[in-house]
Image (cartoon, rainbow, N blue to C red; front, side):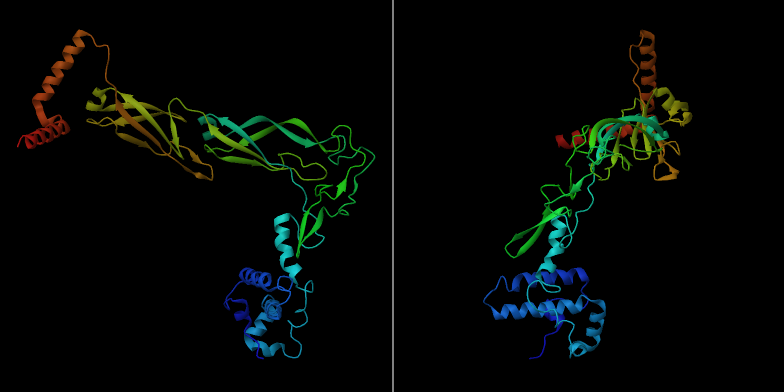
Length: 381
């Protein structure tokens, strides 16, 4: 009987990559494995067929040869024939799923030692003023954390003694559990994955290898950090104890409210109250920046709400020191209050004089009045 094309057997195209090839093989192996189909010769044949196809196509050299010469390249000693036997052989069912379950339960193949334990990462919320965030600074913080015990140097064993090999997992850190036809690796319940146990524990840490402490750290804050930015301090998190590695500390930045400026990325904004006489006549106004004072020229006839842009007076980009944002100043007319009788008379005279000029002095007001008149006229008709 002629053999089917290996790509057809696995249900994949000739351009398939290794990951999709393996995924297709796993699916077929699960479906047709003899342990799941004990009385089906057809399923056994399909399992062997899929296994043979995978053994060839998963090997780059064999796959290239197969693509060029087809099945003829392996006649008289097929690369797939020797391993197409039963459960547990080279590339068998256990190997198919061993790495998959190893990824889930923390190990690789059979007897794989669990990776080195790692302490927990910590987060510290740091509140900065706008000036500190913009200019950069260095701050001292105190972080409560679990650190290596100084008495036993993190081993958990009493000085002069040492941890011993765990008898449950024989130092592997994992145990294998058989569930039907699945063989699953799990963390050893006695040593919790370390592969060792403490028979004579340290008196200061009770065999944990770590103790509670308040760690003092100096943190350099780069210029330009913003709300929500995080600074990672490698190895300054909690200790794992018993020979594990420390986690990391993440310093999360938040900004205090500023009395003058609000921040939008690398740009700053501020609102400047101004008398209407300066808006009408024009003039020069002194405005604040984080670097000092700056002069702002107000053209005559400027309207309230006008936004002025001062280039390069914003915030340095924390990821690109050569780029600096801008400062936007919004001028808003301030209505005078607590006027004297004479001031009120002068304002009334000014208002009467301006009204006489009509649209010449108040073009927007005149346009608005025309629109209102037209609106009410339409309602009447």
